[in-house]
Image 1 (cartoon, rainbow over the protein chains, first blue to last red):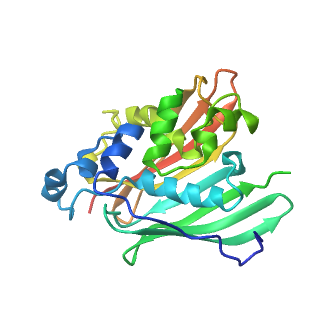
Image 2 (cartoon, rainbow over the protein chains, first blue to last red):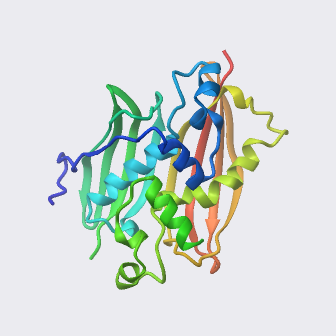
Length: 131
Length: 128
């Protein structure tokens, strides 16, 4: 795949199911009740239990690594801003555009969007290409 | 780091790359064992950061705290069998536009002293 400045990487589309936040809580160790307890989340003013921000960041990382043939060593740096709240059972779309491309190094501007809400913004991924 | 924890994390975030799931594939790619996805850094470093977030000396109002931004810079890959140690420091504290910013920096080293990841965790507390 050509990674020229201005080109887009393949989109990643994921719909986290109702129990995804529970599985992510177990895998990550983050059991904050706003992610796994709908009643608690509503009691503190949220629409329902919300996705872990770092789960969304993991989707951004997946899309970045997939864009360079999938070796996890390629990903050197990823920075993100969390905005809005991700919710279970709604599709998330991760997109990225090449902003720099030089010998062996690619920088992507990325974001994650759900139902018109940009839940991760101003994300930047730096990748080293193999070879 | 354990193989089943890496597989559990990979499943939770939808990773299907065999380097995280299949020992033979990971070894064929030059890894000593199953390699963790980059964002697995959360699994082994967040506990150290949480100790800082919960430090009563800082007095963070957890009910009003949001995770504002995050950066990871990766070094040596982490494989099953590695032993990683993370140290967290308070990198910056400031107020802006009615919000308090608490910035933590975590540095994780493997058993050979090689840096696996450096994290910058910015938590925001609304005071207005």
